Image (cartoon, rainbow, N blue to C red; front, top):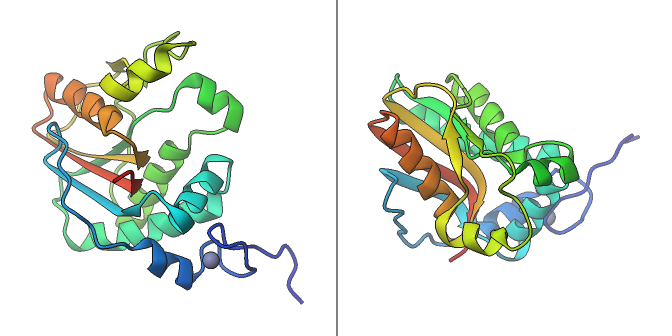
Length: 193
Ligand SMILES: [Zn+2]
């Protein structure tokens, strides 16, 4: 008997939060993609098909799917990480958080840190009142307005769920550099190619 049966966020079949078939399908060959403010950038796959369904499911509150991604990422990071690395995230707009009830990037960052045995801290927050009508298009091009809330460590891993133009990651990395970070790495589940 299986109580509380889960369905794959990619294909909807019962079983894992993401089934192995969908994960394999999501792992498209990765073209190198640089964001100018990041020292390195990694993502699992392209933002399409099964992986897009998984990210949208995560956005609507599917924590199990985020934990699965965190396990995958955490295992990789644990193998190849410097001891000074601190995990953080690109903060969601307060409007987005209100709609979803939680910040999926924060949750993902916390889970990755746990799996990789690294510290996780908040360094950035959105400048209040910036998520208004008409601003969304500007954010996609230039990234959100961010405020550094505490002095960053030398090396940071910035986590987000999806990179669309890379503007959010770039804006976050730039803010952290200006505040004193030396190396900023980016990690997302998916990337719009
Ligand atoms: Zn599936």
